[in-house]
Length: 87
Image (cartoon, rainbow, N blue to C red):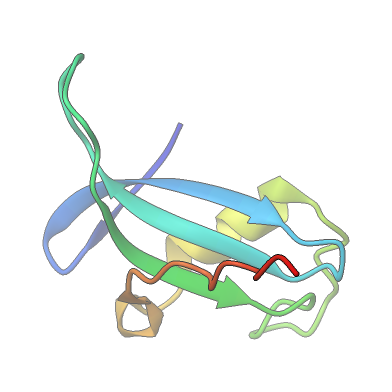
């Protein structure tokens, strides 16, 4: 489990890659068993590392290394992706 501090609070980081190679990472509150975690922050990262411009190639370890060292001000308040409307 990946953890990091953002604005003085420790969060669990959960990430996924999109088909495009971009990724979405969510900082969730760390809770006791039986409690519900709260999605607090989110960041979407391009397919290339913003610092080195090396492609992540859907390598979660490389993404995690970036997420552990990036500036915490890059994390936005959590938002949900819009739901696709069914026709």
